[in-house]
Image (cartoon, rainbow, N blue to C red; front, side, top):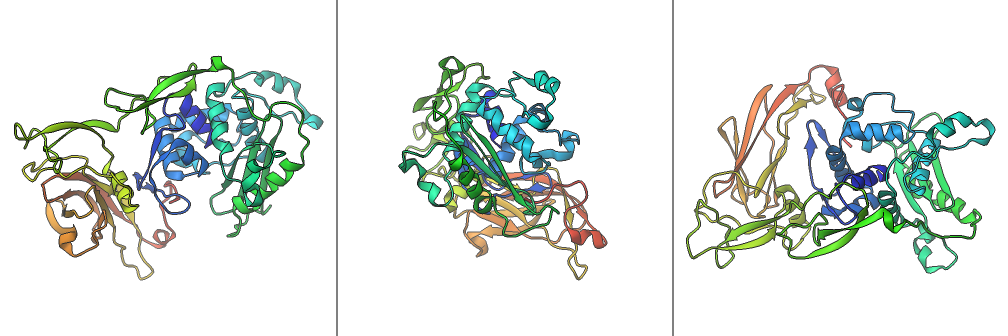
Length: 457
């Protein structure tokens, strides 16, 4: 994840203050969640990296490109990526690829050298020709490595180390942990201007251990070792030359390149030769009635009863998460009742994703399990009406006497075949998606996802 975030800074996808979406999402048949099974709605890139959130990282990888990241990892020294990028897919950022401890340490050493390729020198078995062949290669820029190290320095340390900044004799460390799928490996890595450390804890036979958590078993060892290592005189922290950076004006509340719609802006440092930071996409000009109680557009506005304002417009699935967490200003006013029909960002089908193929396993009794279809609406008290292949399939929300939570769902029993699903709110706004159902047969269906599909992480 640190290498992806630093590379994303280099190509202009984000800066540490940029907002990333953390809400339920699916990529084909691949659904995912964070390790704590919670969603936050919106987080800064810095928080997403420090908390090692899966959902924003996968979205970032999808934007950056799996083949490009696969090539970057190989170029950075990972020799274990023996399969093509398509075999790993988006799980490449979630531990879907193997790695060696020494090569993992090498990645962090590379960040510590501000992006320059510096292969490990194993003194007892050194190959000078290989070392010379890779010396001086820049994997990511110094201007992208430095803010990544700054973000990793902010990760809270374990145990009594949490208060390290209160003691003058303590040294800063950019560090990160990771636990492999199935809890077979616990990792911790850290880098300072003088030292790069890596810790692996696990079963040499590759067995699983439910108690194997990197934050509680690998991280304490990392800091025990770091605190005992000699510290040479010199800078306590990394330094970057001013020529490696330039300033970029961003929207203060989104962290993306400022547009004319951003009312408040700020300046951030970006790599000197980085691609232009992508423009803010959240601020829009919206039209409201004069009292601000309804949104209107060309379908329903009245001359003299409309005002234009700039608002931060969020996707419905993000707004739903923020509303469930009690975040103020998470939604816009509803459309005026006269604005009937049409598709807009007020509602969205969150599962299944468009054009998905859904494999329905059988339970122990041989019966087909039901598929849960989900949607969200920006208004907490909204009622959504569901249609499957143009046939009405009931309502969710207030009128159905179901939960008035911002998330709506139905669980129909579906035979194999192609389906279109549509949700419509009381104002006639709608969202439509298409998917296909494939019912799994035989004993293999009870074991989970079909061959070739990623795990549910």
